[in-house]
Length: 474
Image 1 (cartoon, helix red, strand yellow):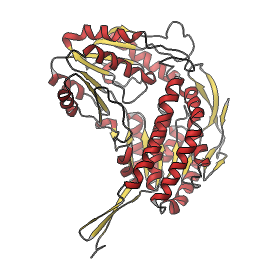
Image 2 (cartoon, rainbow, N blue to C red):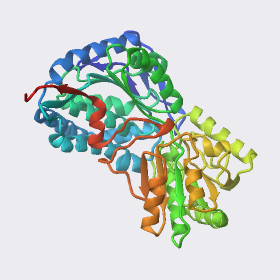
Image 3 (cartoon, rainbow, N blue to C red):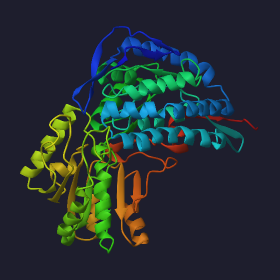
Image 4 (cartoon, rainbow, N blue to C red):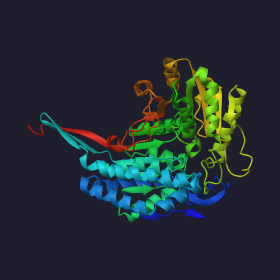
């Protein structure tokens, strides 16, 4: 049983202003795996005070000093990777193979990328007689979700450290175990007191306090579009910078060629990773209308590989994160059937052999139209819809007919055609022919999928202010 009853503030583990412990539920057992303290605005005040004090000196450190600190964090992170993987599996249900091979390593990749790119980043340039400099924005507030806990923490913390900012982190109260280990890593690495602060809590108690705090200069939020709007509203009175990575309903355009069946199968498998709990999952598969039946058969070829079960074992899908998430997904599946979507496999209810745990059947729907709820709402579960298109122009039209714009996918044998279609999709990250995520490529959304960019050196600019020194070389 894990107990997180203290917060990491100013280089120490401190008691909360008011002790309020809540259960952290293991989604595989539906039982408490531990407890976490929920903070208050008073705890955020203490963390912001520490961060503001630390900013005075941390913001003046050299690039070499910050590279050394990042490398020290990398070394400590590597030591704790097995602990981090076990925590992720327990808190949010990711299969142990996914935790060990993807969830934990991707956090390390962002730290290493920041350390590698920092020495060559241009913090100043001369234009005529003026010098343009980029300076750390100040104290940053980070609000992160449960689905990729280490990725979402590190895409914010790593560039903030690199650019000389200090920070207050609120991880998801649903999955707080891995973030507590991150604080231990930073402490062991010798990150100066007050540079990194951790306050656990929920959205109303701590998230709102962070986003509205006058002592916080920017807030970076990852989560649902609904919650992101609230963060922006709370931040508006203090005119702080807001960076948001929000929801998605990403299209996957499968072109009409001889690789069709393989590309369909690959697209189905991609949706099911992390039990579909990824904001950039390719959940809308667009296929030629004349080949919808063939697409359904290709999807069925993957079904037997989508093993569901105890995440500590050798399975592809664990449970979804919570009862609330399970209920939401079940409702969407049931309404999709009522709307006329055809179940290729899966459907409502738990798998027959898993009566306990928030397990969802991997589900594929065919004969879906883009106006159905199941095609427009982010399910955040292992659910894919197949939508027919008449020609490539129609496919692009359907792909862009969404309030979201986080990611897009295009697969086909003609590389030039794949590139052309990809360039027409209105989204921040387009994967061509199954290309994997690249930690140096910027990640972020169009439209209601957010604003700003994370990953690589593009993330640095989110944490920098630009100053003009006129007459510097007069």
